[in-house]
Length: 118
Image (cartoon, rainbow, N blue to C red; front, side, top):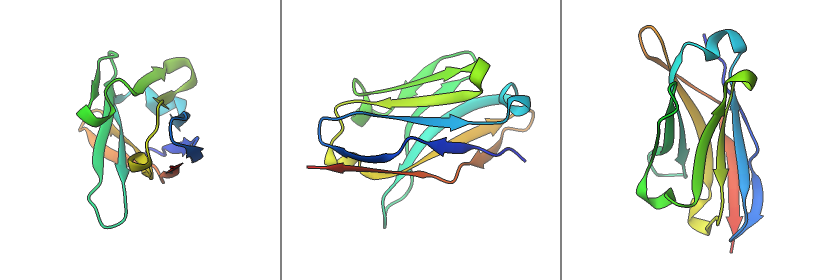
């Protein structure tokens, strides 16, 4: 079992910034192959925002390119999502997701609420 703990959500005005953090226990962080950030609004499916693999390569969906940055600090067993120029449509619960070796089993965090006011 891998426990992912998200933090950093909150209320921000449009154009503002937030940084989300996703921390996994140090003993398991090294066997996480891919970590991604997803988001979900009520009544809609959870959608991918960005991913980072163990080697450091990143992927972003189009609607966050140029605004969000995913990064990781292996020493702190933490993945970050820096969100700049936030828009009201970015309002959602943001979830951290990890695929863990050897079988790529998926684990989810509890989610953190991000609210962007206009």
